[in-house]
Length: 106
Image (tube, rainbow, N blue to C red):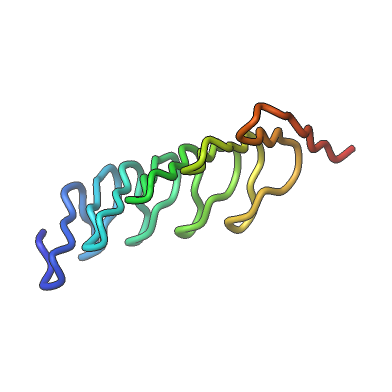
């Protein structure tokens, strides 16, 4: 499907919503490839921002949620748990210079 704003979706549909496997290219150049549920990323997928950031991992209701890895556009990264689009729980943040910070909730 090609939307009026030039956004493109290719993939599975159910009840007139993106549902199943698919890929969406947004009008701003961002891309999502992965699972959809009721029109939103839900399951496992990869989101690539035009500025070079990436997130690959689990999604729920369109938000990063579960295990995943984020790579920043400046070389920093976070690997670990996410909740409602924010790092939450066990994980490791790696700064541009290679410094590691381990986050662990016991």
